[in-house]
Image (cartoon, rainbow, N blue to C red):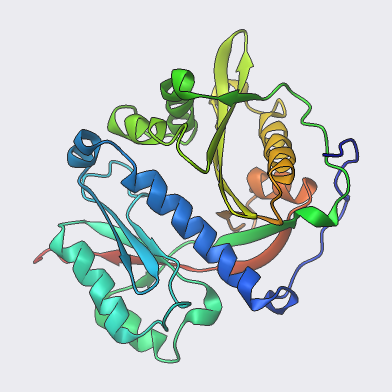
Amino acid sequence: MNAGLSAPQESREHSVYDYPRLDMEMAELAEAEAMFRFESGARAEVRAALGIECARLGGGVVLSMRDDPTGYWSKALGFGFAEPVTAELIKEICEFYRSRAVPMAVLQLAPWVLPTDWEQICAEHGLAAGPPWVKLVRDLPGWTRIPEPGLRVERVDEREARRWASVLMRGFGMPQGPLVEMAAAAVGRPGFHAYAIRFDGKVTASAGMYVDGDVAQLFGAATLPSHRRRGAQSALLRARIRDAWALGCRLMFAETAGEQAGAHNSSLHNMLKAGFERLYVRQNWTWQRSPAG
């Protein structure tokens, strides 16, 4: 692995057609697989405590957390590739959540897989447009040298898994308890790579990556509020880029919240500085269980 050169100073906006069809599918499927393995891999008692049920359906994944204290973890994604998105498929997804007494869930669908009758489907199932996310990609073989991490980044093993998971959840403003146990269970499993930064011997920033073949998927990165604006997120990005390169990955995917008018998403700009490019904007669609059922 070569090292030393910083990422380019500017990043151009991509059209979805700039990448082969297979790569566009990978952008969605890599995220879906990482999320599926992350949630379904929790221990049985943790799944019971949170009401976790995960299923593969129509080529995508449906992730259900009945007792989610954050409203984040129930989501359906990866659809539109093995088979088309249809009214029947969306009905099946919504019935999955309804039958498990999930109060709300988010459907994350790539813009080009939406059918022509999507507006009608949304009206029928009460789907509402939520905040959009930006999907990003980094073409790893396109760079012969990789930026140095800057701050010291450590790889995390099972011995530090709970500490790593605790910082990850706290950094995102999520509670401790079963969610920490769910995240900690991913450390050491095939494909998952966990990273941390310490200050004064204590973990203050955590991040993850999931690798499947020649594709890497960034999986969470958070810094405790007391230690932000010190370069931790950029260092964690660079460390994962270097490792993905060393593992022979061809592409690295990530996603983050889109910027609304007047807003600034530092995660997005950190990724652009690290050589990522905007691939497309993906609309989130929120489903909520009706009071009657």
